[in-house]
Length: 185
Ligand SMILES: [Zn+2]
Image (cartoon, rainbow, N blue to C red; front, side, top):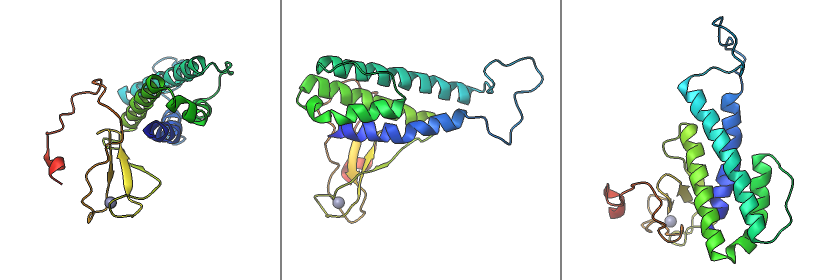
């Protein structure tokens, strides 16, 4: 369920990474300090973005290969990241039937969605979810990759965050659930 969410988030945000790296028309090329084979600047931000791009590209390729192998599907030809993500999403029902695989896909998709959001400078990416909150029936469910949390953002709704992300895998970075008052909501 939430694997679909992260896959979708990643597919939507990934092109923005490419945009970040595209040379902006208004900016002069890197300057006369000798040839720059890559054409782009080498600011830390750009390096981080291109690093992320590579990480996600490799990660998605590996993920798709792992999925297809595990599901005994024939290999497919390489494709751009969004296409691969769509293909993975297309077999999610089969993935879900395999608990280990489902957990792996979800972890990886979430990790990459989070990394993508970071590289794009979003401290807290919020993703609109389809469907209605079971508490207040409004279309106000949002996912927060940073906090690995799905919750209703309707201010008059007191439904606690939806624990939708599966069991604690222990792999998450030190997000101490008690660091702030969010639980008191
Ligand atoms: Zn609600």
